[in-house]
Length: 161
Ligand SMILES: Nc1ncnc2c1ncn2[C@@H]1O[C@H](COP(=O)(O)OP(=O)(O)OP(=O)(O)O)[C@@H](O)[C@H]1O
Ligand SMILES: [Mg+2]
Image 1 (cartoon, rainbow, N blue to C red):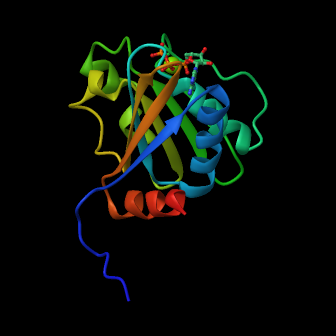
Image 2: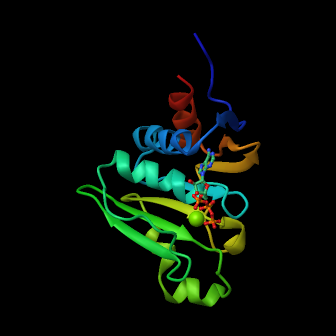
């Protein structure tokens, strides 16, 4: 029997040699994440954060355009049983705007929140279930995933199978 009820964060490191690999990781995340969870996506400009979100949305059968909501801060995708909120906080400047726009309520049990540039709004955001760091590695990328909550660790264990 395995005893894994500890609260140490679990980690997963994955090589993503090309764009297709990033899209495929997004698709695997679509199957492993649940409504109520939030994911932080960190990494330099062009590291592949939006590509990952695109892969996830495609796996959920969304075939429209997926663009980084840099100016609007958030893009909403409605599915039958939950909403997916894709934040891009690169241009986030004003915590008051966060409150006034009601973004806090976007983090609820019926929504899945994916957040690019979370460090720009650190004081406003709730703690994530999963943190994903994308970094350049040769021609490709490497992803480091950390489970920060029990739900996040369950998600990572599912991905690791
Ligand atoms: N694993 C990979 N290997 C090589 N290229 C990749 C990989 N994943 C994504 N890319 C490419 O990197 C480019 C930038 O990707 P993307 O727009 O997703 O980055 P981003 O992290 O969202 O950037 P920003 O911070 O500007 O929003 C795209 O051209 C995409 O095809
Ligand atoms: Mg982006």
